[in-house]
Image (tube, rainbow, N blue to C red; front, side, top):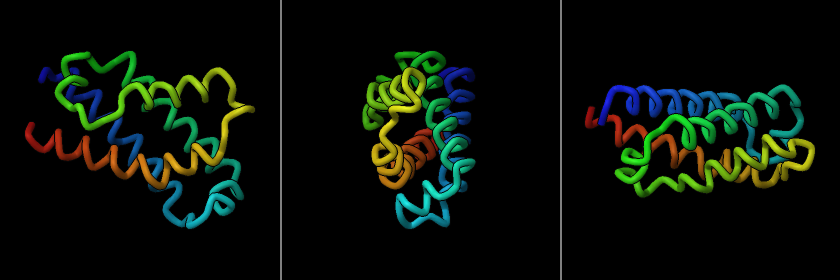
Length: 114
């Protein structure tokens, strides 16, 4: 893997860490949504993850990490960018609680070889 791909994955990892940090004290969706700044910061970082996955990471690297759902990541980014007021907060919350920890683990595991 080239240095650009490693740098992109490291940026994605940083965004997952930010999301998890912002939401560390949230046990429920209601707690998550109780702080608008946290919601906006989280959604921004999810958008950045999607943008990096689609526009910055090369197809070769994505094909090497088949356990990551690249299309779904970019799909969430599209839903956020093209209709923020219509973003389903349940999807965002589920992503934060279920998908972001898994994504962080996958990226960490992959980067540990470099």
